[in-house]
Image (cartoon, rainbow, N blue to C red; front, side, top):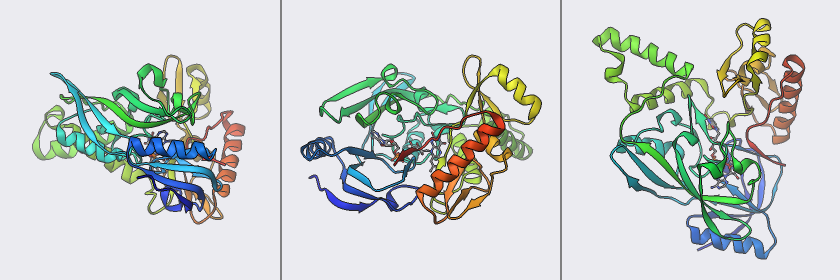
Length: 350
Ligand SMILES: Cc1cc2nc3c(=O)[nH]c(=O)nc-3n(C[C@H](O)[C@H](O)[C@H](O)COP(=O)(O)OP(=O)(O)OC[C@H]3O[C@@H](n4cnc5c(N)ncnc54)[C@H](O)[C@@H]3O)c2cc1C
């Protein structure tokens, strides 16, 4: 049954841990409760703000309206053929637990996306990605409810318009829908994807150690579970744990430039880090730019830039406004130094 509370602190419900209060708050564990909450909000003319596990949001103020935290659970096999299967997952499931569960079941494809914090329902919002794989690569369809009409409908790959940390839900569909479940298409046969440089390097390092002990070939032992373990190892060694240093992961998206512009940049900065993007475009490492501009490890009052990963802004006891001021200073400095605009990745609620 729907239970709505008033003036609820969101501090522990998002990984930045800033103090912020929701005017109204409820936990949603079924489609029925979600429909009731939408009606409840509509009757009172309230905005509905959707929250998963709060790992990609910044609450810069108290939130007016009804915050609904999605905890619709369930992982079910939807269909299967000789090589592939489609699994249906409730939006409230924990993303990393899903990755582990699918690997245990022998359902492959999510291993590169291990240890990304958050819920399954939020994964399509910014088309989560890491180590050369994006959600869209494994996506089949999802189910949403329209916040205004209360109607449920299915959306396929084309409808979701996925892009780099982007989707329909961050553009024209923003704040219009609540995702209730996601269908992912996984493989029954391992199909390892290790082209991403940081992953490949770590695997090679690992391989050297194993080879010295057993004289085995690379392909003989590399399993999706091992990829997952290596991804977890890299992430733990590179990223600050939000439980220790509250943060929302990458604070900026990597800027996209034309390949010809990258050539010019390479003359000035031979060690610049870039990744293939699409057609004639390249992604530039925003972390590289921020580090090169001298921001890495810098502290400003109660906030700062992480010492290991310049792309991560951390809360050291300050305020969300401090984070936004620091982010603005960084954006100005990167624009001046490199002529590039850094776009903020987490959703900021002002
Ligand atoms: C340490 C750290 C590392 C990270 N690493 C990565 C990474 O490697 N790659 C990557 O892509 N991201 C990364 N992130 C960002 C984050 O993990 C993802 O964006 C994740 O999908 C957010 O899930 P969430 O449940 O916490 O979403 P929330 O923060 O709760 O919400 C994010 C947005 O999605 C909306 N939303 C949430 N659930 C729903 C729903 N069911 N229906 C409709 N809208 C919804 C919210 O309204 C909000 O706008 C990282 C974050 C942290 C803290």
